[in-house]
Length: 420
Image (cartoon, rainbow, N blue to C red):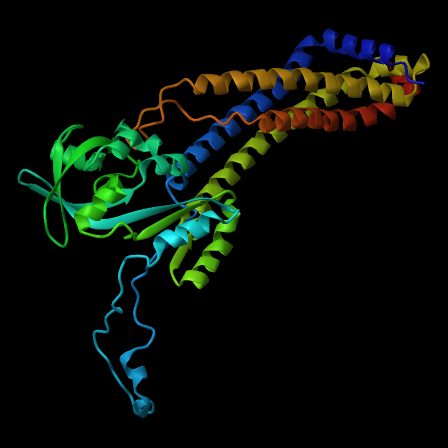
């Protein structure tokens, strides 16, 4: 029967008599785990911030009427020219309207779907912004501001004003920050907008919108759906787009195909719309985890080398232990215990250092015009990273201790004593 008290006491004595080597081995684990925690928390936090910058504003399914060529071209209307060589110039798209037919019943139908968190109507149009002698082309989108803030985090991109102000102000406009800078406008000013079908309408600026994408902020603004319908001279059921938010993003593709077949509309899912961006995110995450694992492996090799040298230095001790009645298994357990103690102490210190560094990074100011609502560097303090880090510390020290201790188990004490 193994006497753990004796084994652990001997392991502790070995570690304390070689305190410098013990400290070096522990610090190898500490800095390996600390670096892993710091790197993975910071990089995954940064990746999540970049993902959210795009994906938070992107609907899981975007439904609209696509302008496309007629499926039946002029030549196909005539049977008697089928065997001839024909050339038709300047084929135009079929006459179609941007309006989604029966949009409000479609929204009601979608919201009854158990997978749908919400379906929001929008009205989009091209306009000119007019302030004094300045005239700029751009886009105006009519929305339900409170619902947009609830489902698509619109409030995170409003640098001045609020969605409530837009909701409660007739003829109000949430102006893109790029337009405001070009035209020297501030909240409370009035800007005139002119749709492409003519007319000029004064709107009161209730806030500024900044998405973090400069080209978009230089043209995009928002107003109430009722306001834009009035500007365009359309009825209350005039809707050009429907944005759908789901509980599970994985359902976006199959549901988009179902919507296209059922309503004869174009429905683009989020993964199709952001395929290139998703590829970039995958590569960044792959690099992050590859570097993190490398740090942990390097720390494991450091422990192995130190324990290997420790066994060679303790040959006499091993011989004495075996001569006094300790079995090879007992000797192996002594050195395994040393490795696990080093791993435990180093792992705990590594977690503390990693947590301390990530908490420090989380307080460093991070100011950029592209991300107005982000005030400090992003950190992802996922408890799973700490569990993985500590588990790897124990696993690596177990493996690093197992191989040298197995060698110590087989040492013949007679040879050691004779060699002396």
